[in-house]
Length: 240
Length: 240
Ligand SMILES: Nc1ncnc2c1ncn2[C@@H]1O[C@H](COP(=O)(O)OP(=O)(O)OP(=O)(O)O)[C@@H](O)[C@H]1O
Ligand SMILES: [Mg+2]
Image 1 (cartoon, each protein chain N blue to C red):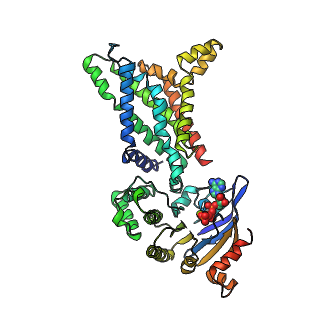
Image 2: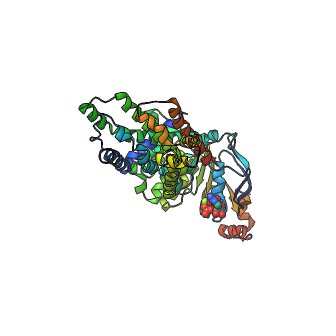
């Protein structure tokens, strides 16, 4: 497993070797903070919390994480470097984990860059820091699950556009399953237990409690096992 | 040192490599010849553990590539066709990444390895240039440097002199010759003079099958007085 380190390092530093990383960080920050201020009415709500910031994350991630994840394997396939990578002495699992962890760290960095907002909230009022911390934790865990899906879809094609579209579609399904509008429509035709079951596979359902300061082991397990499962499929897809 | 046993590769219903077997000993330089699409690169990809063979296997220093690919990859230096590399990295960064995955983690050791590879391939002048801005011949040399970096016992080179100027071609041939004494080398080429100048053995492959496996002298003796290219033509044209 020590072979993860060089792969991680190359991938992570790779983001900063091109303008892509800086563009992404700025877009992410502007979009997430902008939504919180203008749509989430961060100030008008008159609450010392970041709920209006976190609440948009499932929707924001829907587009921004495929943008990061789409190149993960597609680019290696297109440029032929995959042949180089997989004739170096490392296993497919080590390569998958190294690249995934690098992208995840990068996303965590993007999420944590909003920390000045938390400081502002702390300056203006008396927020519950536990709730803020659990929001960040939930957001980073959810980003991991999104990224797992995107890493998998990017391993299926050498075309980044195809990879992006596949990722968005797959994530869209996982978000929609728990969207309240969709669920109430569904409850008209399905019994309650069936609706709950469907909603149970959604990012939104599991993310909500984090934004309220509840760290439920079931939610943590959901995100981690979804991440693990997609990475497993990722290895299978590459070894095919 | 290399023992290829009955390698077969099917792409769908098409058989790209059909029951190819050969052995290469220490000190041998094996020239792999054949028309475009004959299956040279595919054979090399299976030998280096990048592609899974449909049938058959290859042993490198006693390690079976289908059972223990990582052990094989440790022994092996491989230059893939058209020398893929991470374009956004500088030459030195890229070779440092290769050194790390090859197990040279200590700073001084890593630097020594990178410098040695840069010296051997005469790349010191471009060490801080990003790979995507290099000319084709220089990119090819980066690929060669990457394959040599850990001084492997077995070298697999897919068209190593492709895109090099006449001086560099000579340089690379001299280098391969110099190193060959304690290595087993397999190289593919379309330059017949290269085979005469360099190789101790020639394999001609046509439509996935081996049609000749002998010394360059024996190949000449097939049609005394004829040029090598007319012998090549008569061996590979029959199955058009
Ligand atoms: N991924 C693939 N899918 C389908 N067919 C493939 C694939 N890769 C190679 N082939 C086919 O396998 C055959 C052998 O290809 P290969 O690249 O090994 O030829 P080659 O001898 O290296 O040729 P060249 O001299 O042009 O480099 C070709 O007919 C090629 O079209
Ligand atoms: Mg080829």
